[in-house]
Image (cartoon, rainbow, N blue to C red):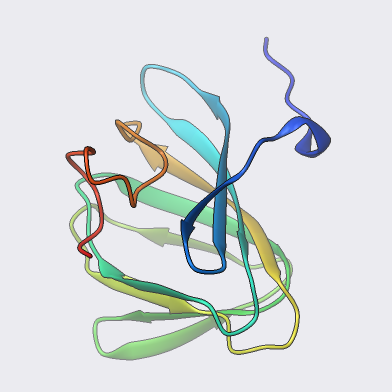
Length: 121
């Protein structure tokens, strides 16, 4: 078993105000911590991976299928693969949470131009 502490993570900035850190991974999934600063946006993108997540601090507004869905502390969400989605922190505090991707993303920092599942720029 592998144990990872939030204090030991080394986040990278995937976009302005969007910080990601790989927490754990296996052959079938990876777990990623995220922090999204107030006013920051995750631009619309899609990927072949299923995505499930949990918010433990702040409120994140998802935009998908023409809907706005607000998730806050204690809320979880799930997206099927290839579903276009975006997210915005419209609040005044950071949003913190965890995402799980299956199968694992080739490069968890989805903004990397060398990643085959990178978000559009």
